[in-house]
Amino acid sequence: MHDLILTTFDWVPEAPRGYVRDLRARWAMEEAGLRYRIETVALQDRGAAHLAHQPFGQVPWLVDGAVSVFESGAILLHLGAYSETLLPTEPKRRADAISWLFAALNSVEPPVLAAVVFGFANDSEQTPGRKGLDAFLQGRLADMERVVAGRDWLAGAFSVADIAMVDALRVVERFAGGLDAYPACRDYIDRATARPAFVKAHGDQMAHFAAADRDRAPGSPTVPAA
Image 1: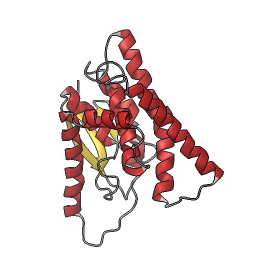
Image 2 (image 1 turned 90 degrees about the vertical axis):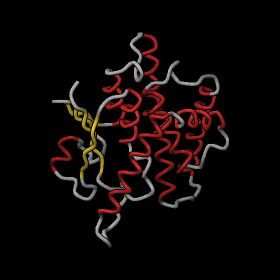
Image 3 (image 1 turned 180 degrees about the horizontal axis):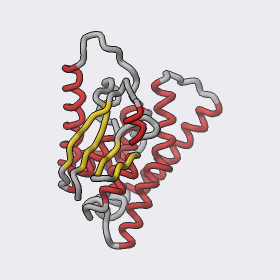
Image 4 (image 1 turned 120 degrees about the vertical axis):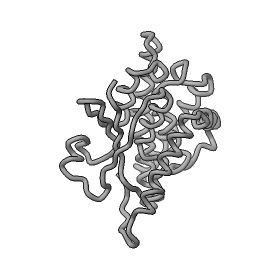
């Protein structure tokens, strides 16, 4: 294994701190005991070097020797090859973990993020489209409530699937109306975020951006994070 280098933004505004998706990779590497270091790219200057690694100008990306991986789900899958703590080797359990990883990214996260966009825009108008989106999200949360009510982790043991799913559900709790109606989902988040690896990864991300505040010139503009 080569040295792992995870790149995130040099700074973001306060609202997304603790939710920037380099957290998922940090969490995974902490769970697996992998050595890594953090590099940064300027939030306000997304140039050619940035786009060469992440074509949408987002973060994170992971450099592993000659390999550069972007998109948090792809990074989790890549890291899973290094540790059975992240991704089982037994075929059925591995397939379950991969299936739930993609479910987090493709079935749960999209309606969550759509709801967040409306929230940040302070758009509460109950148009037919907005009502449809809300119903879709609540349906997905009801599905997850049923699933996690009957198990501790999605694929038997903790895996990258739980990292992705918990991180998506955390966004609901913080930015998209909360999980009062879904106590099993909330318990699932609490179990995951009590893990020492999450505590370390989250604390490191918050400290990273707090340090960036101290380095910024007074009056520097604030812009939304991607």
